Image 1 (tube, rainbow, N blue to C red):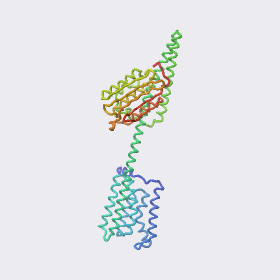
Image 2: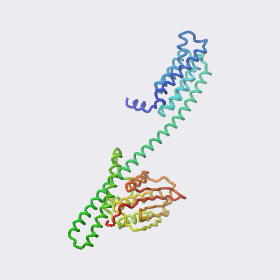
Image 3: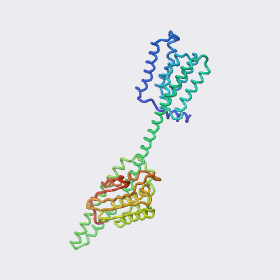
Image 4: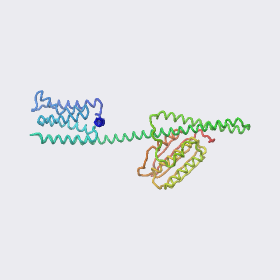
Length: 408
């Protein structure tokens, strides 16, 4: 019973809704009235008119669905066989054969759609030998139309299945990307919470220290440090509030796995604790060393004052550095040249990686690395650019420096 329910659940409905269901009935009615209007010497009177309706019943049954229509077609052929397979009814069946067989082959599951025209052809040719004095030419013509209708329906079925498969893949990818973005926001929220708590603790300690300092110049320096730290803390709080808002929008996305793919360095090294400027450069060196040990020729450049980058932003950059290195391992041409650059300017910080784009499909690629980068950078008002030019793949992350604190 369950198998039957699962099988019928895969049958697609007729397109067009209620209007689409009325079309087969109208077609059958028009064809029947035309046949009756032309008249037939073989069938006369009320009983003859009822027999003339027999070939068009499968078309009308299509309004109930493709399964009732298929059953009606076989019953119709059996009914015509009991009448001796008159040529006028077999000829009238051609229209229903084309409409019903093509629609069923299009909307039925693939195996059943493939079996239907074969069974229909087998039945028609069997009747040629079972019914005496049958019009073989009429049956052969009907069989030819059944074959063409089945081929057309199967072609449309194949196209529909490919389209549905592509749509499911796109939907699964969108769900996976939503999970990655939600997961990245959650991780950043925890990190920002720790960093804000650290900054507030520093502010409190500096304020207590200012109570005991008698030198006005030192007191002024302490108050300036408190103001700078408070400014950065407010910026981190804004980012945290933004994260919480985005998390509410994405609350329906269940996070089942916190990993976005194989990592180039140990994730434990990026645990979310407050990082120093030296630690950020150390992580960049670690990624470069890991790439070099994998056979890549790495050119690493660090420009600007890394200490000007806020602690919360440094933590986000650490994760971005790891993600960039992992993507290079998965996508770049083996043993090729890799350029990595960290630039700290007056108004923004930029992290860029350039490598030769590989042509082979990467192993274990979740296709969500860029999504994680975008989610991470979007929190801080930054953006990610990734494109290929002249065989080189460049990934660039740019984040503005706002509320900079020099007390980190």
